[in-house]
Length: 460
Ligand code: SF4
Ligand code: SF4
Image 1 (tube, rainbow, N blue to C red):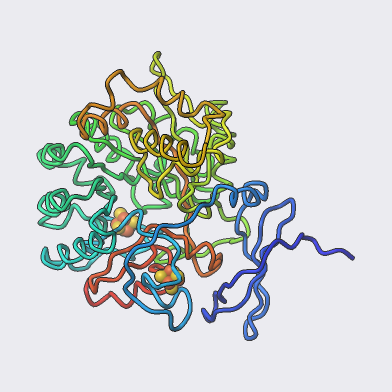
Image 2: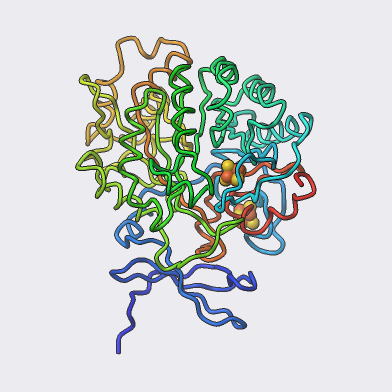
């Protein structure tokens, strides 16, 4: 009898019972891509890695070398126990995340941080964490996410954002559930003073109260709408961040994207399949939502506006992030800039970052074109040039950012690694790193899987 799968590759993984490192096999069939692991003490387990084998098999074609940055630890016990960053890690920090408090005004059943009652970090500690991140990236750290718990509960939140801007982070994001933004207009006005490289990353799981009841244990839809109203009023760039859970809101992705496109402050939607850490209850793992499953659902739920093929695995982390940019056309509608283009041809002109700057893209194209003769065979660069206004290159940094903010819409899917789907190769390219109070940088998934408990003393 034949096996029910085709063998693809070996990886290092862990037993989800005892968390011992063991070998694993990545295999696929027409139902998906699976990780098969055999623990000497706990037997064989099969876990779903991706719902769409085609996506999984082709994503490596978008991969490119990672960027180096300073290290904080040595290789000793093996990945993911040596975080970090240790010399085995293959990517710098694209997004550094600082959890400034563990207090929260919600108690979500899917909270990775188990937030609720907790402590705030002192300003001095937070400053040290920002400096550590900036220094590790050679003074050029790009994106800082201020997170928690609920960071807007920190009494010094405005000073913290101000400090981050003064330290020169290109982009500062505020991860929030939106309650304070909905309730306090003066606070929103204060946030609006940070315009230019500042964004609200707003938890937003759908347009039905049942969804919030299940994921957040509260009916908060009206609060979310009020928060968006306030953000619109002050024109604060906002990304809607949606936790996607099988059978709860995975059929609602299309309406979330359509809703976001209609809200003037919303610049993008990020969709995150739920991962099994923190308070999240483990459910049927073989039918969990995966990154490629999100792309399939987007195509099925957006009536032709978006196709799966419009998304590319993000070259800085092809394993865990897929993205597309839409440009506003003259009639105010959006078209994916990647549509019909073979983006593999262009992977070298994108920096290892989440930030898309027209300027960097054009400059990189010019440099690579001179050095390696890369051609604009699919017309991507020509299309970008057609979309930007005359004299764009001579505008100020803030004006350029504002143009991109107001004329593009970013849709991304990013998935996390838990002890069930842990694939070491994928972990070592993770580019979202938690900056810890003891000045380490720990990949977000590794932090939630293994390391978070060590930091309880700082937060609880
Ligand atoms: S996740 Fe990265 S930093 Fe952590 S142990 Fe693995 S390679 Fe090292
Ligand atoms: S997920 Fe966010 S809003 Fe919910 S309890 Fe955790 S920190 Fe609070």
